[in-house]
Length: 302
Image (cartoon, rainbow, N blue to C red; front, side, top):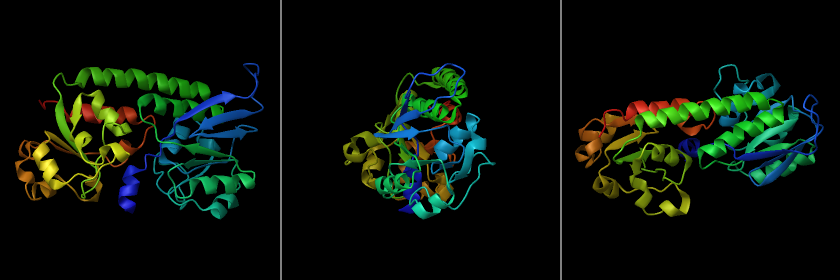
């Protein structure tokens, strides 16, 4: 379960920001109000002791130049290499451990254990908390970067990054989008959990005109992460298989050895693709790298 949680934790944030009062262009805002994940966070000043319990938020903070303002990051925030990684958990936040570091902002996922209670406890200690919510599309991911830029005083850098991402991703999609849809299966783990087109990663595949076999599976509408049966998958006969669990030992060879899988088109035609370990589940500037990876992976597949 922990392995699946790691794969599913998107740790991206959907945020929108408004400055609480008008200030001159060259003056620092006295108060910043951030609306995120259905909650409102008020910052009395630009934070300089930030704890990020989100690999995506960590990447965004460093990408916009707010790295020096980051005090500590969670145990999964392994990028960039100079991020101050700690044993802090993104899944089960420890209020005492967080408070002991005396942060002036904590970024917390709404999907973490007892997120609301953790937020309340920290705020009782006068520690602002920014709640994150997984985005469903690219515009949400862009909002995250801009929001973090606003909160940290790095808005111009954030705007520049978003502008470059939009151009790069648009060019990548244009160069690789399939005219005729190609069916695929995205494997989260060996128990055949997948992601539908309603999820963020599902939207990425849709941008390339790939047809998701998980969309019609039982339970797909309930969560966006249905568990497929082996019989359903073999019958669906995907033309491509993307392995998000390659880091845990799954490969073209291991799935070919599964009962009935050797006859699947993706296996027969050697269109089984091992996804990179980090970028499929992080929705920051390296999204460009993920789009480029998918584009390169599907070249020549018709």
